[in-house]
Image (cartoon, rainbow, N blue to C red):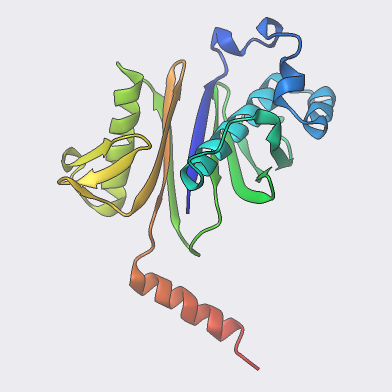
Length: 216
């Protein structure tokens, strides 16, 4: 499974829609997305939710295909329902050249955070966090990821590192079976990752599926 994430600070001056180039929407969004924006009562939030979705799907795609190029209109976002409230979760998918990425977007009054994942092992665990940046945002995002992964795996976060680009999680210099994505914008840093399901758990999932759907 490949994962990507993107966070947008909704109060950052860069997110002012009246500051964007007049042709920005036409370059970034497909026809269906532009129609959704025109009909939305929360255009600012929807605009950046769509953009974060495209960015997160591109990051997941890039890991699968290092030659992938970010052409925003080619990453088509489908949300059901579109985000309209101050907070909550919107779910959907991003389609890129026939490949589908599952999508979750979390909104509050200050930020939007999108997480896109490719198809992968059943039951793979997804972790994510968003917090306000303290100090260097790149370092803060790596610390955030290391702390959350260490807690999930009952490991000392001080012995974890997030290294290289794309990011790799290591424990005592040995790679952890996890796919990691980092992001930051404005006041916020964020991360998302998938943790592999232990072999015993995968076996239990497979056995349960066989029980539900026995062969004829």
